[in-house]
Amino acid sequence: MDITINKKMVNKSEKEQDFTPVFKINNLNLWYGQDHALKDIKFDIPEKQVTAIIGPSGCGKSTFIKTLNRMVEMVPIVRMSGEIVYRDKNIFQPKYGVEELRTQVGMVFQKPNPFPKSIYENVAYGPRIHGIKNKKVLDEVVEKSLRGAAIWDEVKDRLNENAYGLSGGQQQRLCIARCLAIEPDVILMDEPTSALDPISTLKVEELVQELKKDYSIVIVTHNMQQAARISDRTAFFLNGEVVEYTDTSTLFSNPSDKRTEDYITGRFG
Amino acid sequence: MPLINKESVKKRMGSRIAANGFAKFLFILATCFSLLILGVLIYRILSEGLPYLSLDFITNFASRMPERAGIWAALLGTIWIMAVTAPVSFILGVGTAIYLEEYAKKNAFTKFIQINISNLAGVPSIVFGLLGLTIFVRLMGLGSSVLAGGLTMSLLILPVIVVASQEAIRTVPREIREASFGMGATKWQTIRRIVFPAALPGILTGTILALSRAVGETAPLLVLGALAYVAFVPENLFSQFTVLPIQLYNWTSRPQEDFHMLAASGIIILMIILLIMNSIAVFIRNKFHKRF
Image (cartoon, rainbow over all chains, first blue to last red; front, side, top):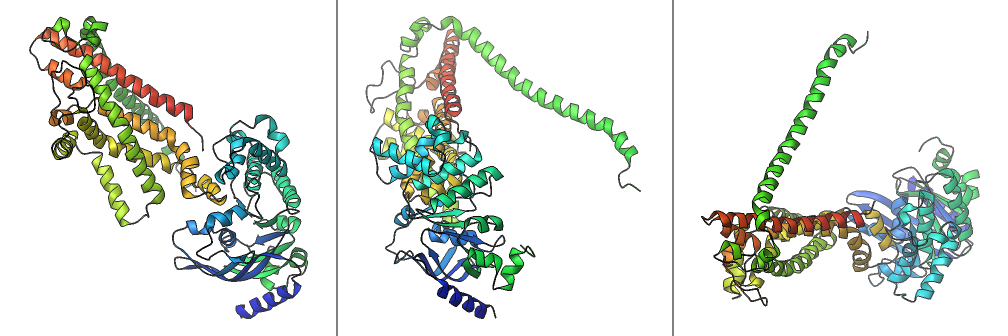
């Protein structure tokens, strides 16, 4: 029964597709030991749009976003099958280095996690590890990235101060700036506002709208209003499966699956 | 009907507060006891040792005559030994800690190694002396040299440094490692630029405390054949040597009262060295301590 629903959904979304995909996910399965955490995930993520992943706790949404840059492999007991094609290359190919992938696919984490270094050094970290030593280039990258993350005006006079002195919301935007500094193609955001106050949340949401002009963004959120506000397409995950994946307005106004409807109307989750 | 009888609660109140006061008194007593011992020790050593303490005492060699005896050879011997022990134990200890924490797979074998390293930290120092005698002095033919002594001391404090460094590395939050990996950094870049700098204050504190233990050790070096009476300064890694604790031990075991006074003066010097090393450890911890 579940399978037929899934197939119908996938067929429908394929017909709807009128975008250039940046990620194509094919029959992705993932296990933590015996626990089957992701089941036959199959959908495409569009370029230069915001794709939201919603679903109740434990549905596999964080796990899913971490497979996109293979951060999930840091868990020792994880096993995967299927493929994720990023720009025509399967990221699970043995030849494909995780370092190369993560240079293209940056990530912003749930909790702001700046390094215990100065604001400048935080942003310059990415370029530095990729071998950029020229001070002038670094200065430019730092300024451009901080401007890109809409935090330049707040920190431009204290670039050499420790990043831990910033507020939580500022730290998170600094982390976004740090991510922009490696000039990625895709930005993954794993519940980036869950540790922030409403005003900081608003700022990050505005920033996401701004960033999608240049970057493809995948955002995991447990906040349905947030998904409705900022995303172009939304995938609803439940128990490790994609129940529904379509453009955000359709998913929230006219869900085709009963379970999606139940979830977005707050009947469970 | 309330489940808690207010009357009996009220009745117990007095004894609870009394017990609270008693516990506080007990802990103050324990602290005072240690302070008292420390006070007596410092008083005795200062009153015996200060009269003999002079620049000559520091720059003279040991002598049969108490008024001409000094600690120059022992002081330099201690410095030489530390000059070998500090780099060797730091590099090996921190390297081991990084491997165990960052690279080694967590399985039964690494667990076994882990337990054994902790056990080694509790092995009596004389056992390390015998190990050094067998390996460095005899097998490698280094003789009773500064090099053999320094390497033996390194073995002695290695486990302590490994454990302290591991703990320091473990306090580096997972989140900032993830941040580094998430930007395409390799493991080595993450260790060198993120984990190591963040763990460094803890590592250095542990290392310095371990080194101050080595400064005060006598037994392993006696087993190695370090001399008790030395009238020369070590010239290179293969020179014979003595160290401060051995010199002190030698003086205190002589019958003449004057030598006991000399030993007290030597203890003052040794305590000053230890105090300086511990202050450095505290300074590093406060200066570079990072909040996570």
